[in-house]
Length: 313
Image 1 (cartoon, rainbow, N blue to C red):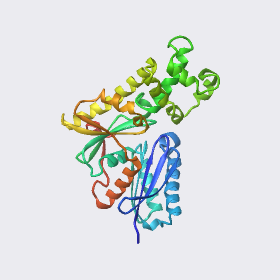
Image 2 (cartoon, helix red, strand yellow):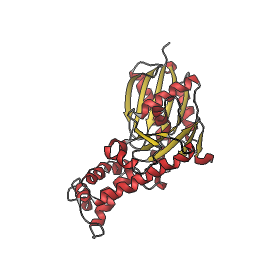
Image 3 (cartoon, one colour):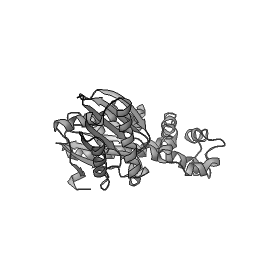
Image 4 (cartoon, rainbow, N blue to C red):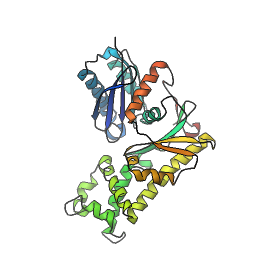
């Protein structure tokens, strides 16, 4: 019987799925909408993930009994007992498989450090978070949703709108960023404020590229937004340094924000010299497949998750 692996990477904007062979070579993919249970609720998250996995198998003539291992890394999943509930649901769908799930940071960790090497990762897309792996234990720094008020696409986009509205009463000078934002709406942002007030996190985050574009034209407001954001990201990475006791360590940067070349330059400005930054080119969902493969070998199959400084959370 052929054996297959399944991986999923879910966040605040989209969820990617991969079906792979037993060696981890991708065979098929599909994409669904956002799956963070903090945004859509646990049941909607479970339904979306099981539907995505089922569709991949059905469309590729893979029987449930042929699936050897499944891993789903989803933002917000480790709150309360949601990961335990999802693990049970996946086990019922794939009765012969080793099934596990955790936060989306595990996808990036296994994408960046496939052999379980020590290192840190920062995810910065709609939201932001940092995870550090040292000797098989994973620590979390930041990434507490609405309580981390900068350093992600959602907050960048929201700050851009706040700047536009501040120009209406003269608190901010009207410049490149405000003009770019106004061009996105008939009559400008102020004519569409009721619609904008109802935007989702994903919709706000979609305006983050405008901030980068305006910063390249030296717009003061855009530069200030990015300085605040990347100062926060640098704080996450600098905090991770204490776990490495001053020794050099690698930091993988993942997520939509880091796709802009300016992001790397701004991050370097705020991190310790011994933090070696690199952009993760591999899609995080492939890290989920690597994690699924590891579950079969017993190497790092369920990595303990503790808060920074070993305080449970």
